[in-house]
Length: 270
Image 1 (cartoon, rainbow, N blue to C red):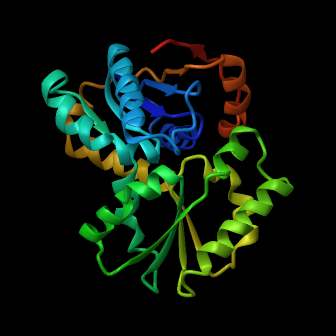
Image 2: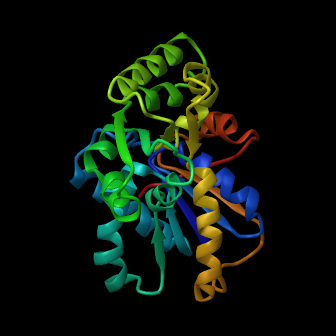
């Protein structure tokens, strides 16, 4: 039984890389729904449908635990999957997201209690981060900024060109205009770490930039420690299979950029 990692495209590879580096002994399946990416500007119904199909597919591939490594899918589909699908169809299996582990860490970094968040339009409109933050750290002010053009730039391999710099600077100007007290920026889209050098160069050194992989992996380790009944079901042969719903050649080319090594993916139909 494997750990499944799902993303709407390639961004979840940043989460997979972090998890795999710390937990290399487990067996993994990564699924990117590249044929239908991006999810950020789609309706709730579409995202829920696509995410449910992907989760069910990964379960059919013997995944016992699934990480939804996509903020938009975590925001718009995770709760319904956990509450409506798992208890009825997969009562012993689990699906986790990336929002709660990120929110749990914000209070450790901000001194001014004012945090900015960059994400897709879908994640921002869902208000999922704000809802979780009010539960866990209500004293923190969250400034949310939708950055709709960053994912297409990453998917096109434009990591440090003129276009990337232009839009990063544009989004930062819009963000800081809403508060002069921001001292922390959470990159709440798994694509955005590929733009980290440009983002760091465009923001003041006083602003801490947080990447979700740094939080999701320790959270998963803690979860497995607290749930030995899940951990003992997971096989440990150190294997990884990469799946995509689009052409494997394009996935493989960009996956090498995300991961730093070559992969050979397989195209699948959901």
